[in-house]
Length: 182
Length: 182
Image (cartoon, rainbow over all chains, first blue to last red; front, side, top):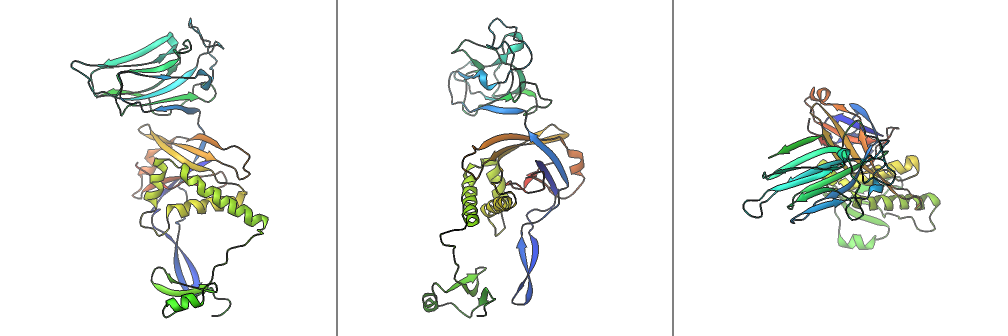
């Protein structure tokens, strides 16, 4: 597959000439513009698994099914291990919206930090927080298998989780790695 | 009207003429304003040939795929057709039937896209829906990603830049021209 880049005015129709009652007449057709560049386009090595827009609540968590995340070659050294004893990469993107419920109020956002067998997190009082990065999932007992925890959560928040397609960490990310509060 | 002509101008169209020639001659306003007469359109009647039946199936299934297009791609289709007589649905079906004519199967459809911007470079992420005319092979929804595209090359022009999707044989897949803000 190829992503074709064109430079030109694709909204300007092309012209083809037809004979109509013996007269040569122009006819508008789809423009045919040569590709300026053809970029190889291949199967992505990341697969979007969860795409959530939680409703307003005091807290929210994203449970995950570990079977949707292929195992890496790294051994899981945590006390609570995945059944096959292999670590699993995941990529998370959190666009977090905060509206104080009372005064004073603050927010906390947590994500699985499997390399240290725990969750990592951030807290603050800003209206918005954005974080996108990759990490390892942390195995939990059934019923406690979640990778993202938000407290509180406000409508407008958007959380996306990707898995690798083969367990290996690709050399690119679904969205650029970033972290900002504003 | 000579046998080899498919359409001819007439002075005016009257209700009397429309009724008198119904089923033999079709009167209408060509391009919205020029009164013309043409042979009454003949739709193929059953029993259809195998090719006619397959073409009808391909057309019908391709039409059904329009509902699967996500908002981002739908907007790109609609914006791209503004000011043109042809609607985006005509282009959609046209690309689908050209692909079927060449390969004998349904065209892959770009149902979603996003652009990952890393500052000096970017990549295009596509979600492609592949369906099959046999009615047995299950559909596949896959994420594809382009190789890195350098912005510097694209900035050296005053013309707008768009991208779309082709297969490796330079056949256009069902994807609109999407404007790239460089």
